[in-house]
Structures are given as structure tokens and as C-alpha cells.
Length: 129
Image (cartoon, rainbow, N blue to C red; front, side):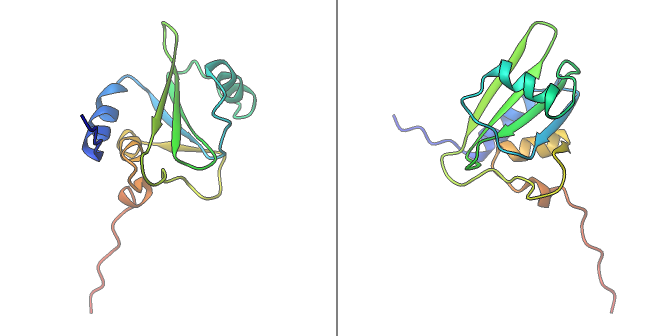
């Protein structure tokens, strides 16, 4: 049987699997994907100067932008999930801050491989001639 993933499935998974997350943080610099949960927890504390136990999710990407990891700590332990695109790359901020705040809807679009920055931008004002 041939498995053909689609964007709707990714969007549905991302929108329901993480209901309890309090905030989403997108880490702009790529990380070595050989890193496990413990090393990423140290990265959050030491490089980002954040407390990983605050209920937030930290989203990392690999250098090519084809995979992402989501790190979350809850009361029972640590979650580390990996998402891979079969085609294309995840849309990532190009410059600026070390850490970007995402809304839940933006995270859902990111997981689907869609340009979440464009979808969440305010609509341009109409020109009246």
C-alpha cells in the first residue's frame, strides 16, 4: 500500500495533539538533529535563556529546513516530536530575533508546510480611487 500524506492530515494532527501547550516558540537558528531531548532542554535554558518547564513548546528545525522538532515539558515528562516533509521546506523567519512567538494557528500552518507568516499577516487596506 502506498502512503500519500496530505496537508489536511498534518493540519488536523497539529491542531488537536497540542491543545494543552501554553505558548509556541520558534527557534530561528537551525540545530543539529542528532540532539535529543536533554540537549535541547539545555539549549533552551542556556542559549535562549528560557525556562523549559513553563508549559511552552519550542520548535526547532534542521539546517535544510525539511524537518522540525517540537520540545515540550509537562508534569509527567518530556515530549520530543519530529515532523518531516516529503517535499519542500518548512517556512522559517529569515532574519531578526533568536526566538519567534507563534500562535496556535500559525503552528498548525507551519506543520502543514504552508507559509504561516503570509497567512497570518493582516490584510492590506483597499485603495479608494
